[in-house]
Image 1: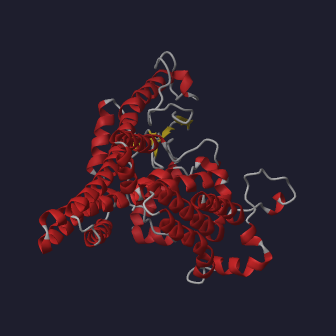
Image 2: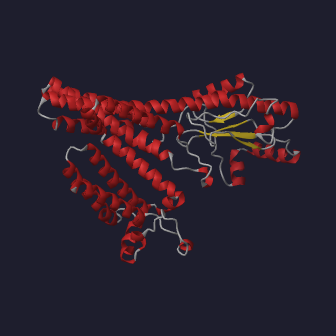
Image 3: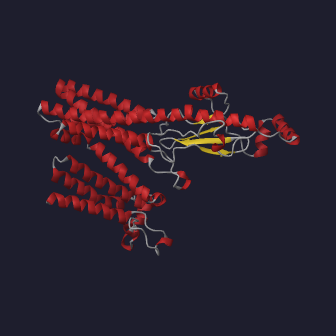
Length: 455
């Protein structure tokens, strides 16, 4: 009964934090009846806390005072619950989720209220989704082992369900939302930060720590520690290479994996058999997570290339054929049906079809833009060469005179130097141009081969 009351109380405190620290109503909304789910930002605006709010918004390090003050209760709640529930992995994960969520609410309520206000209910949904994913990944070894104690079949079903959820989110979530201003959506935070950054780093640590603990108990002595740390560094570097674009990121993940592995080896159970079993569960949970996260990202990249190099390519050819026959591009893609395409194709981003899985087309007269949204905030766009009208002879003469006077004169006349030199085409650019040329297209894609690494 005490444990149940503890969980209910922790949940109630999280609800209080949501309404107290959430982005409150604007000045014009104070007189309106707000929806029940809209927070009031009481702790941020309440007169006794105004000084704390001002201190928080001045920036670090002063902001650590109010942040630490309100981070204290959820962290203490988690620490007390961890001791109270002992080996209950589900309760540990749930309490960690609540504590992390409350800390996020405090941070954004004090330091980034405008973000919460802009995204409205979507921010809270994304924030709780992110903290839930991180909590499950953090406690995945103990959750997997706890399920296996009851039923190995149940454990494998749960692992398969988690992998499927990662796959669906990684291949479905794009950076656009037709209901949002500027079509910007916060949902890629779940896949970009929750999976590819935080999740993959934690999964690499689990993989490294589990393998290191198993190897240390298997080999024994100093040699076991050396082999375990070497393996952890190798896994960390490999995972870091996939996550980050620069070596310092690889080193950071390898360092985290190495420290975690050392802790796992130092605090492994004395019984060699039990220690190896615990290490095996930790390794399995981490390896399955890495496989699901990185594998799903590869599938998402493949779907993006298919949409760009196959689905869109037929549409681009149809647009050029239309212009050849009618001396202009269509105002709408539907004008291509049925003479040029049987139906307007749609880019397949993920397995679930929805209204946002479509090409966006804009006619610019002698040119156009064809776009589609991919995963991780990637927006792909194709444009053909723009046919400029013939310039006025007097303007051409002036330009030739400026060019003959030399670069210094031209710079002095305009008072701003030209620093927009084109970059050298990469091998990927050349390969993509060759693929377009095979179909008689001379334009260019603003669309990477795969979602870029953002760190």
